[in-house]
Image (cartoon, rainbow, N blue to C red):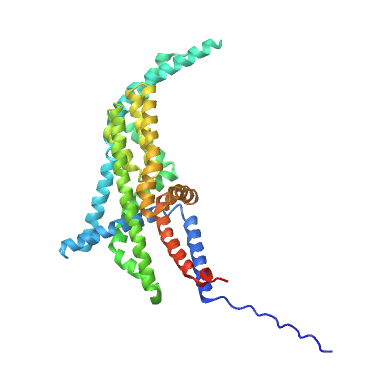
Length: 370
């Protein structure tokens, strides 16, 4: 009888070069995301500075071409960056007429409203058989004295608060100082930095990589133009809506709210609080509530379901549902930084997915009939 032939053990083959490269890129991406998440509390000025440098770099390059070498590159950077931050400061200065008109009204109205509230509480307590006795005139006098405190006392209180080591206040101050410096140094060396990053790309991948970067630049340019158009439309909408309700400060509050939507949630929230405060000091509560519900409620729907999906999401090729998901997901993972970079990063990922899909459809794995 012949003995059965033993089966030879199958030696596992090593991964293909393509699989190795994919594995390397995967772990590199995981490492970058992990570092990003761990350092998210200190990355805000650097991430925001990089975004601003990316936006302003073409303007600096165009300015260098217009000056034809007569203006040093550093001065061009200072001119463009200074103009940008002056514009931002101008938007913030819209708050000045709001505050200068509302603060005196607050000093007059708050004591009266508190006195009315105290009388209402006293009346409600009396209906329940509870006797509350307090000197309403004394309450009003104390409030008037507190609200009429000198500016020196207010400054002393604020300075004392900062001296107690408020971490968020120090962080805000640090970021405000650091952001212009980050933008300046990035703009001065932008071309050198981008060239240095490109040098890491293998030569055989240059054409494919540059094509990818060009498509990303096109998509991000569409995103920025859509964002600017959305800001202008919302500024006109909020100003007109508040003016139709008769608000005296409709123009500065409306323009500020519309332009500040570039800071997700925060800009809209500040505008809403300012409108509520101005309406509360000028109108009765019913008129103020109606104004806020109609103007800001409609503005929220207009921004979230029409302008952002159509002007921003559609321009970069994102479905409106993906836009909402990207904002929520990135915000949940990385906080305020995530909200800032949600749509730009989603646009870049969209370009990568498109190219991956195209290569997948052309691959033997997809086209193999077996």
